[in-house]
Image (tube, rainbow, N blue to C red):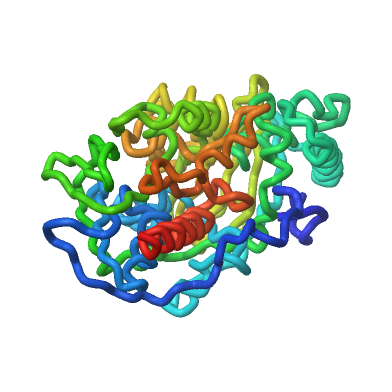
Length: 454
């Protein structure tokens, strides 16, 4: 993302940062299938068939090695998931944007496979303050306040101070609450008092961004077609006490020379997978200090042709007291959906209240912005349950203030045979599906180098 405006609204997003990506290769890979190891030992076992796990597995196959991927869900893609039945149109329940599209491996895949893409960088086109339309100059004021906040956060981060971003936020600026909402919950998945200045400073610029009419999740799932994945096979335990690894599932044990674990950190923190011997203390502390943030969606269904006076892809922000903020993406690709977003602490709170409460909150937001008649037009809705999803337990990882450097510990191999990969291990592309892909492939290269030496 970046600074300035794009002619439609207040163009605000992550800071411009980091042209390089820490040595992680970003070339898009054409599918290259290897042999399915249906039984017996394999060179590598991968836990999780999200973007990281599938990228790692395909890289192992390209090198002529054997691999098995174990996936708890009944589908490919992990937190990338396009669902087509609830609203009669493709809806991305998980990640929707192809971020950093000039560096994202999924962009050339989507182009080659004929997907319909639309450029869309976040730009607040309408700001509503607790049911009151904002002044005509509010969007420019919001952008100015946002820029001032970014300058202070980045100044702290580049100065080596890993602080809560709220500690340096310019609280005397107008519309600071709205700016903090966009920068914290709606971008990084945490409120600014839980956002590390170092974490934010090290996050890469994500421009350009694209949405996919058929759903980004469908692109990710297509990439995984033909890979040796065992679906509905959750991993319960990993024994790395011997020379290799032994991975236990309800369907039996898989032995391998090395293991790449790509599950979200929330799953590891909850100890849904046990390790024998336990993971090193330093790694367990790092996992605990990089908890899952929250961003969830409230899709609201409207009659076909209804626009509420908005343009397709308009971004609307409702700022409410008590950090109960709600953003909408309006009718993408002409679909009859207003897609609401809530994040940070309030995202967790609303998740605990359940889907009905979330839909009611979304409908109330429509009422506050557009009036009672608009709210009565809401024909249905939904909610994304990443907080309670047992194979995610959150949206994406966000380091606690003071602990941004802990991400480096995630990259250290355990016993030269156990490796972590995923969006939490993606360096500047943290919290993105493309970053997870890059992390998976880079980790596979490290494992392959180890196998060559052994």
